[in-house]
Image: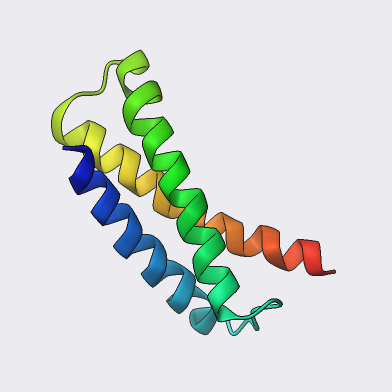
Length: 89
């Protein structure tokens, strides 16, 4: 089941880190590749932590555990874009 979370997280984070700067008309301060790599690595780490540790602690099971872990990780990838832009200033 974690493989599904991992694949969803990778695809979602790549799409969000690639398309979000286009939607908000923002220039990647370190380049598009750095945006995608940093967002995806942070999302993968958070997806693992959320799926394996946090979800069982609060009692999430089944599809809710899967959707919560992947969705939260994709949101973190978007937040990493904001962090990268604040570091550059």
